[in-house]
Length: 342
Image 1 (cartoon, rainbow, N blue to C red):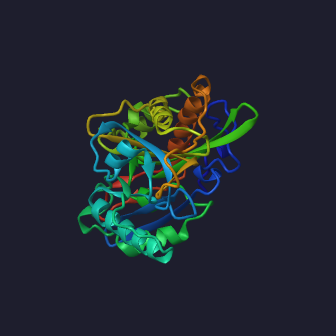
Image 2: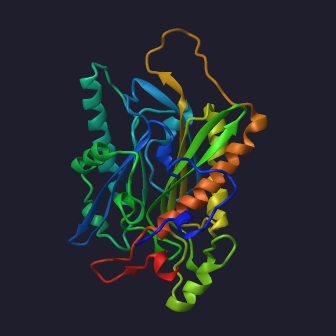
Image 3: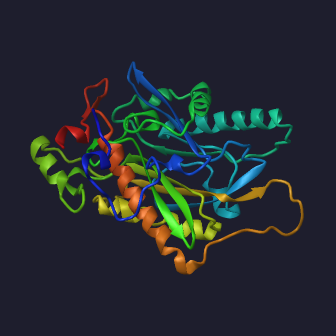
């Protein structure tokens, strides 16, 4: 049975984790997967639901950051311009971005019609990694029904590893996938939660480190294989910290620290895309007046959020590898789970 990092006694960082050490420790956030296997398929879709209510009516303050832009993510331009998100966030494979985008449009049209809300434009957010080494990616197997099923399945408890969008991914030459972790952030007399979910498909085996130990070197000696770093890593951060979109961008950039601690140098062919949102500062679609009141932390205290982001990202990536079982493609390509070597 695969175990997460902390179940193995591997403690990343110094900050306290949330209740379940998941992105869903942030109140209102849920996650759902649909995994597709067989007949050459090793793929799927993962959906992060930032809130239970209609996000188009009451948008969430958000930010994004592209560390290396070898990727096909949809919806970042409007996040960058307006600092909000208004739909669920979906993760899938590279060639399925368009179909998943269309599925989210359909879902939001139906949701708004149900709620009696007029919708003329909407900005779905879809991020991707390329699973072609294990999946028949040309099939574009993820369809609208799978996206809607993932939304319906979304809950606080969800699987990690080779599931959903992570089914066909490779991380540091081993099996990658979906991972998550969280941290409690103390601000004055209040405690807040910062949670991270990652889709990992990046890194070289020989570079892989755990707590400073070059684990990848030992694995390489057994397998004598080290693939180039040409995948991607998507990091989604959720928090209930009261942050502005500018502050969110500063925080999510620290995901790069977590990736680096595990040995990634962010290769040319790897698309590192970070998306973050807060449930604290909601922005109504229809203005009640010209002025809005928002809460925000003082910048002198933001280091706590920086550390939380770095620690949670590092642990989430590690969990994605530890929880992923070995997967073989129809053509015989094998990606072994890290747990085989621990």
